[in-house]
Length: 486
Image 1 (cartoon, rainbow, N blue to C red):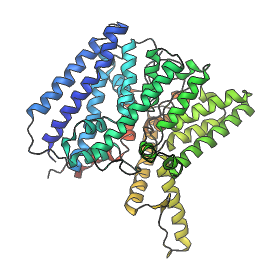
Image 2: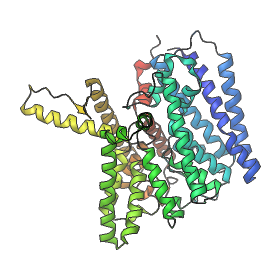
Image 3: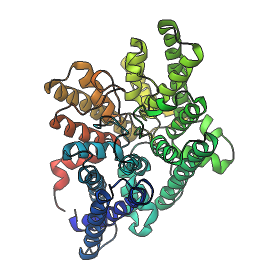
Image 4: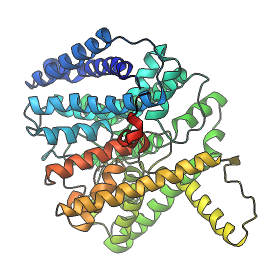
């Protein structure tokens, strides 16, 4: 592995992150005038000058990246971005503890939405804007943006794209990976503007609120500048309905949208088995939760449907917004939400979790194994939507399922060893590795992660990154064979 080429491109990526700090800096100086501008100037200078120095002074004989170099660059970029993103919190005094700042920054960039901040809304407006903006940056991916801007990588672009957006896709949108990345970002930005317009013009919400809600919804992040989350607008059905719809939109494979636009019809969506299962899970879960809220709590049917649909969409897409304290709901509803944290959204979306298509493949694979016990000579190709899934992909999905389970069990035992009760320990791990944010019990929607010891925050932050990059990209770097220089 050529470490120099990795550091060279890392420099460009850090410089790009430095430029992104201009938005909260502008808001701090020109709009809010909250005195937090130094918190953005320092990391901006570090990222810009440090990044450009790496790119300028490190020499490399080639432009392309090997698979190992791509994996290393993606992981180091995310870690570097999180470290830069943590500085505004510490410099401004919002989060004096760097561990807390690292946790908050990681939660933002990975679109997790777990927070250590108490009393949200009392912090400087520009800090809260940066906190929410990090979600939007990380939603479609830092590397994807880089690949879209800089076509100079050649085959290395494919290595980077696959490392940051792993898993099953609906096929490349374009023949070139660079065009694929651009198409994804155009869709992402376009949908963000539509959502912003609906909130600002349609619902007549202030610009600041509309920006922050958009920055939390489209990347399925969950951070907001409001202590009550979307519950602050619970009396505005138009707002909650629009946000519910766009959370579900963000949880769909973006490649399907592109195919539907190219063909001029919705068959690309409706005919896709993952999309149908995704919508089916949402409809059934929302229906069951609505019925239980009406029957067990006496909630009015319309109110129950509004809360159930919003909360199921929020948890299934791993957004983490709340309109109510669902930890006080009946047991079945809470259990459904906990399961949805693990299942997650569609592959190729901004949502986290195990992903619906992987669940579908695991179920079909398990059924095939059952048939093989009494009919070992049967030839049963595994198909999803009429398309045969190759054995390497099936093995990859099974392997990721194993890593997902190991992360859950290992994280649960570690958090339990720190003194957390069983429900809080498991919910904290499930909510972070699934990039959901709020969990149950001690980390429920009305609470935060501030009480967890520093060791636990570091582990949960690592789980956020592992979940966001879907295990293999990060875990490859802890393999001894990965670092054999060739």
